[in-house]
Image (cartoon, rainbow, N blue to C red; front, side, top):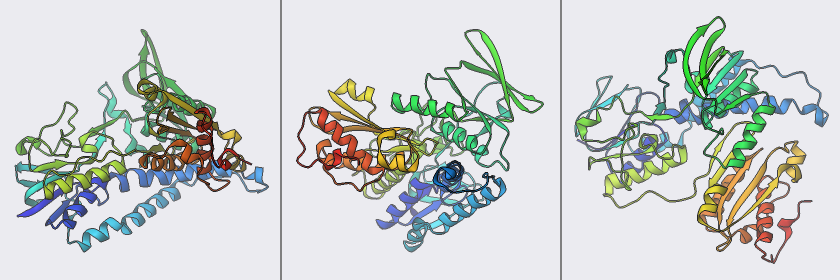
Length: 470
C-alpha cells in the first residue's frame, strides 16, 4: 500500500507530492490530464504568453514616439498559438518540480482521466489504474461556473477563449472579475470588438474602489464597452453572425450580438467525478471541499489543497496549501495554514495589483493615512510613456505598518510584490521610505509614495532621498 496518493498535478498537487516524498513517504501522483495542471496548460502560463503578445502590439504603436519607423503591426494568430504551445512545452520540460519529483522517487501517472474513490482507501482512474493508500491529498482544482439560462450551451468558457484558432470579430464577455477582465483586455488588443458585462456595480470588484474605477475608465478609453450593473441575462440564441444575448433591467428588455460569448462568472470545485461520499469527505453547497485549519477534510486521513477548497484560488496560495497539507498528511496535524500577505495581480492593459486591505476595509478597523502617487509624475513612467495609473499605500496611523498597497498601470504586479515583502517583514512605512531604491525604476515609485505617507504622519526622515524624483 502507498503512503500518500496525491490527486491532481497542478501547483498544489506538485508541491504536496514533493513535500510528502521529501518527508520520506512513498508517494504517488495521479493527474487527469497533463502534468502541471491548469496553471501550466490552461492558466497563467499560456494566458501570460497571450498577454505578452498583446503588450508587444501595444508597445509597437508607440515606436514612432521614440524615432523608430516600422510598419503597422499585424497579428499572425496561428503563429502566436504556436508560440503559446512552445512556451507551455518549454515550461513543462524545464519544470524544477518534475526533476525534483523524479529525484525523490515520486510515481507520476499522467493522462489518467478522472479519479474516483471506491472506498475510503482506494482510488480508481478512468484508464483503469487502482491505487490503495493510507492517506490522500485532493488537489483537483476548479472549473468554470456555468450559466443556467436557456441557450447557455451556446456560450464559451475562458478556456475556450484561450483555445480559439482565430481572433473573433466581436466578443461578449460576461463577468468582470479578474478572468473576464483578462479575456476582454487581451482580445481587445488583438482587434476584437469587446462588450464586457458585469452584474455588480463595478468590474474587478475584489479590488480597491479606486482601482476598479481606473481600470473601467482605461478599458472604455481603449474601446471596450463596459456594462456594469446591467441587470440579468435571460437567454442566448444563435444569430446570423454568431450569438445573441437577451438581458433585462427594470423590466426593460434588451439584446446584443457578437461572434461569440465568453462566460467568466467564477470558479467551481472540480469534485463531481470523485465520489467523495464513498470516502466520507464533505463539501459545501458550492461543492468545494470543507477543510479545517490543517487542511484536513471530514475524513481524518484525507487532506485537500488549492482551488478545490474554494479559498484564495491563486498559484502561490495553492503551492503553500500543498506544502501544509502534505506536512500534516505525513507528520500529523502540526502545521496550520500560513498567514502572510498575498499579492494579487492581473496582466490586463492596464495592469492592476493589490496586497492587503482596501481603503474601505482599512478605515473600518483602524485610523489610517492614505498616500497616492500618480504615474504622470514619476520619472520611469514618463520615460516609458506609460503615465496612466497610480500607486497607493494605506498605512496604520498608530503603528506605521502598511495595511494595503494598490497599483494600476505599468508593472503594477511587480511593484506590489515589493510592498508584500515589506508587509511580511513588518517594515514600517518610514523605514521603507529610507531604502535607497534604484532610480529610475518602477519599484522606486513605492519609495516615493512611502515618503509621502511618512510626511502625512508628521514624521521626520533621517535620510530623505526617497522624497526626490529627479
